[in-house]
Length: 326
Ligand SMILES: NC(=O)c1ccc[n+]([C@@H]2O[C@H](COP(=O)([O-])OP(=O)(O)OC[C@H]3O[C@@H](n4cnc5c(N)ncnc54)[C@H](OP(=O)(O)O)[C@@H]3O)[C@@H](O)[C@H]2O)c1
Image 1 (cartoon, helix red, strand yellow):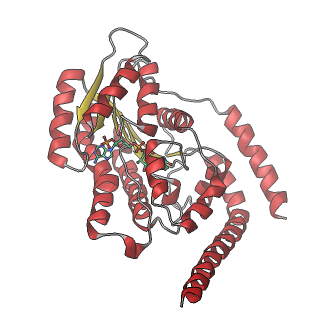
Image 2 (cartoon, protein in one colour):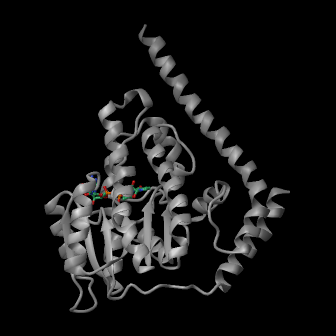
């Protein structure tokens, strides 16, 4: 029964996707700022912006990594007028962010697109985190996105144009073992994106919330070192995506003013299942969601049960080990 309902809905979705003309905003000659642009997804976004003729500025802390990325991005420029600028700043420091972005506008020109990619992931059980680690994760992942937005949004409103991208995660849609702090920060970004969307829509400013799945980046490599066994087992079902593919999808969705940006079938299913009161781009999209949401809840329930089984198995293994030691 579920499959019978799902198949026609998916066929309709695919046909509509193919029929719908893609409204793509040009960023040629426009100023694009990418936080976290020295590595991973952010660097790939910056390269794509350079390939589309934009003036690109990358923000991050480590100056050596910034310089290396700047050289790499320069190779992708398509005309001689393009400037690739780097700024060393901690996105969790509001005054530094505001001052640097103000200065940048004078040197490079008004910012048209802000892509927030700076972020860090640390996994662990709630009791494993130090208070300082929790604060640091909130500072970088939430405030480090809020601050650059706060610094540019008034100017975007005055100019009545602009694109704002927030990079969240698939764990902004469902909490997962080991992601308590990271997932909370990414959930918060969804709240920020939905509220911001309502505030800026009348000003012709678009908001895109990117929800990347596991992506093969230096950040992901570091995150893996902190993952409990349970987290590894739960997340290995999703596969690993390439940063260039994730960045391309993010860029295409942002330039066609979509609210959500996700990649792959699993992400489509999870995003649809968790759609809630999020903005929609067409009535047809709503129709498809209305048809498939019920059956998707059943499929979701299957995943919840299988996740619980994995966690219980790990719990019993640990208990047995403990008992054997005594
Ligand atoms: N990779 C994944 O599997 C995945 C999945 C879902 C979501 N995401 C999200 O996607 C974004 C990019 O992730 P990634 O994997 O590409 O990370 P990455 O390779 O570690 O790159 C992170 C970037 O952010 C910068 N950064 C970190 N802390 C900063 C701070 N306080 N101030 C300024 N810049 C800072 C880093 O440079 P410095 O260290 O030099 O400052 C670097 O340029 C993050 O928001 C992440 O949460 C990633």
